[in-house]
Length: 323
Length: 118
Image (cartoon, rainbow over all chains, first blue to last red; front, side, top):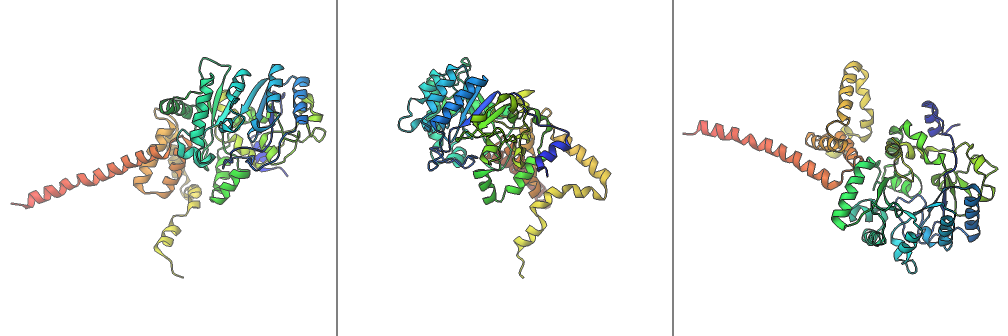
């Protein structure tokens, strides 16, 4: 029997078809110096899962063999993985664009102080969560004191050249997640607010603001249940289903790699342990881009999180970006 | 079983009834449809943006003291990017206008007192 999302697609006569793999999104592990309330990875300081050097070498082999143009590195805090710098420099030497989902505060951990210079030297694109430009909301989601340390980190990134409008090689994008059980606002509207307030209040500049819908899985699902908001939030996601977002869903052009080298259609499927529909391709060892672009994408009810309103992806809203 | 005033109020205003609004259309669907067409057209972005409309909706909902409207427009404000400071400003303005509207009627009392006094 089809899940509710697949039924919804059928009702709208839509097909979710895979295309060429343009992005390899790798999760280096669940270890993080923070434990955010909305984290769909359930990452934190006490987690142990970490990508091995052997698997990191397989990532580089796949990038080389299949000429995938974009490596998107996430975690946890991916910088805490000992193979992190090897992966970045190897990918850059292949001419691959590298994005790092950087939580900002990790640069203040002992031994990680030189991260801004490392990022700049390798022209890494940085994507960092900052739920709001006011401390109260940010600390409510990401932990006490995170806002102040995030501001300090953003200033460090600005100092080495990140976030300037005239330097496209050092791109710094912020991510807005709603601090609660509601959908994010229109990206363009809140980006203007963030740019104005971050500069006027703190003298900080950045390039783009991505708004991302919270997924009703893992830690955020726990919050929804504890606060009595689960049914209402799920209803809101379904009610706001936008058929125009389907053609732009990130799973069509992306393969997600777990810390253990297993492959998934997206990071959310990875966290829910929903494997690829093709049993012949389960891990990096079997990676075949030709076969993957013909795969049937595995879906679940959580997929409504990516199709609500203007849509959601690791690169922000879908329909506003693609109009 | 003792039913408190609060329980009575809660039995009148149940959160889940908001999602049942369309049932009002059961007996006079043509009238309800006309209302919905008008209501939804008012929500569209025009000279005013979604955020401004959500704040107006919240302010009106508050002075009407409609819990369903307050629920719907609080969420609309959050989803259009307003924060609690901005929402509270809008609610103060609405409440102040309502207060002013009450106070201006004091002139009626002044007029009556003036009329009745030597």
